[in-house]
Length: 299
Ligand code: ZN
Image (cartoon, rainbow, N blue to C red; front, side):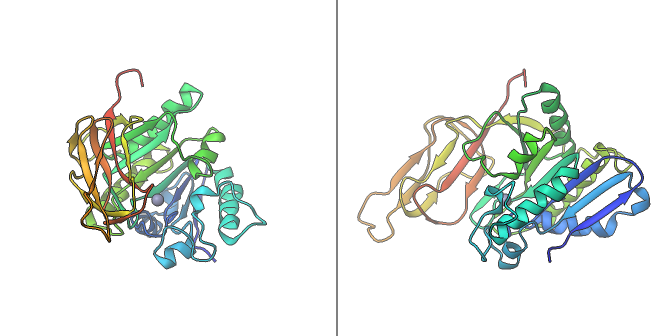
């Protein structure tokens, strides 16, 4: 039994809001529970579906993946109703919730191992009008940065991908991380979910732009840094720092052989650091950093 709240009244669009897709990311889990108490059904035109614990076993285990089958639900969509428990949950969300939604917003953070700036992200659609509609939804969430991806290396099975394939506006939002939650990150999330309710025409009100309009940015292909070896990672730069192409951003120390020189990691392309690994012990292939750059005109 996973918690699910539906508030429906009159005519209007359907907004699906998800949290707890990864169990160790808390802003969405909290904001959607708050929203369930705050929303008066009489103020709703349409339907709001709140899923504060998309992967409930992972939420209960404070982990990214489910402890029942060791699966990351965000690589399993559209799911399999005859599969493992996490595949079954993904199938229910896709078949029963995504199908009836007009807009989908999935609330994330960096989990226990990463910390992110507050940013929303979306992918470009084949049809420009769908890209524009999703851009407007992303701006309405009112976080400082909105990432527009043309493509990403790891999209198979993401909730993003299956919603986009249906042509529906989808944004994911990253709101902090390191396995923590703060009053500020919850406040930003609450502002964002209220804003999207107004933007979608489900609740009347004004959009609160917060600290200003969202800057639309992109992640350059050389804007990721991935661990080259197992070890203890020492960061040189932090969230918000602006790094230059080729700049050393950290180094990896051998755990058992401190006599070996640490491996210095460089970033290929420059930009503003919007995500960094926050725990030392690291394995070959783990993400360490990524950066974003302002997108030129012609979005
Ligand atoms: Zn996540």
